[in-house]
Image (cartoon, rainbow, N blue to C red; front, side, top):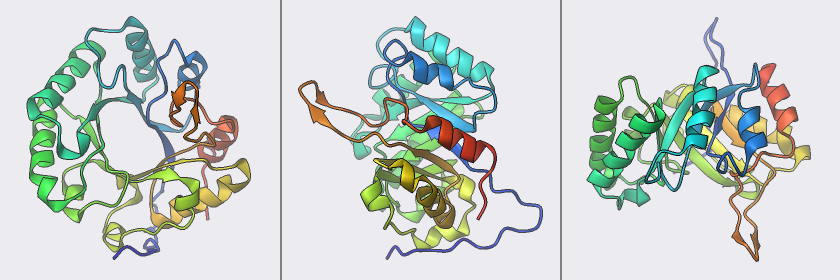
Length: 252
């Protein structure tokens, strides 16, 4: 049963580095400011997800290629988004997406979005992961569960997204006991709808639960005449504040 778990004290000389993982902004033509900010010198970025058109798209996109190239030249990993559809994605389709991401955008790894979390689905996700690592040497693999999965998943990915959702849930969320056996660098939290006044509290929750890669935003899921908006597609209104607070190092 999940419960709040206090991280073990860091050993002498160990530095817990908190940084941002970008779940995927809108297309560079629709969000030029957002993509431009990602190359700001000193921005505390761990990686940026590239999602051209629910994956790599059907042909190379020059705007996405340029944006991804600038980020990689800045020394930041670019990850291609592959939707696993909670285990319902065909293996060959997923691998086709991966090959196009590698061929067209030279990505450094992959976010397996909508990754299943059950024990029964682990063998297929392990199979996909093994193949992805063979395709891309040194590929960084992130499982986008959005919740705490069966612990065996942690043995296969570089990082796990163990929370993805609204601030109203996150502020009362709990870490699974087994996560205390791993360093914070293995876990990611994506949280939307955080007011500026609660940003420090959210950072404390992430540190307490042991997640070193985060993405916090005040944007929310909103339904209007144009449809439901994605809170990850645009930059948070307090981007400068969060870059400043994380970039200078956060401490207890």
